[in-house]
Image (tube, rainbow, N blue to C red):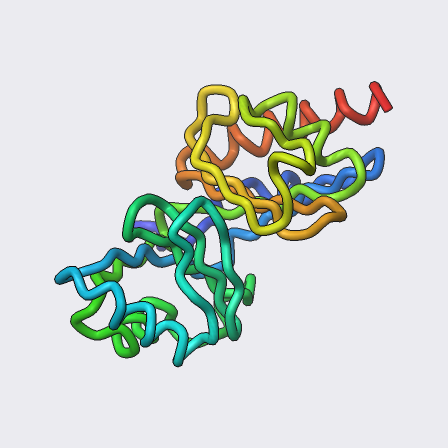
Length: 195
């Protein structure tokens, strides 16, 4: 009889969190993620529906907005990623909620099994990320609410600044999560030594 298959997270249990030198890296892979794309061209109706349901306006530029239990991250013209605030899959099915609420105004696709969220926070997190990302993370250029589609080394990511602590969330394709986590830990160790 074959052995049963059990779901495994993208990171090994020993690698799920890192806390050293004032920098913390956290596995946020339990967050539900869905892609949202304008369907049919009625952006005004989509904006009105999102505003009524979550109290936010969809960003037109590389920004994030947080509504009632949900964050929308700009992902391109008329495209967004929606992320649940809960990190343990305890909330309602995000894809179903979005499809039901947005109806024919948007195409909604579940991205939870294909993408993983990692969080890096603490006073040295900006320095650590600057070792990996080819973008300017200085507070004058990249502040809370900003997002960017970029590379972390050789890995494609979407990163946004959550707060001025600073805290950053990084969304990566699941198959690259372990490599990115390793690179983030190495960058954090380097930043801690340099401090």
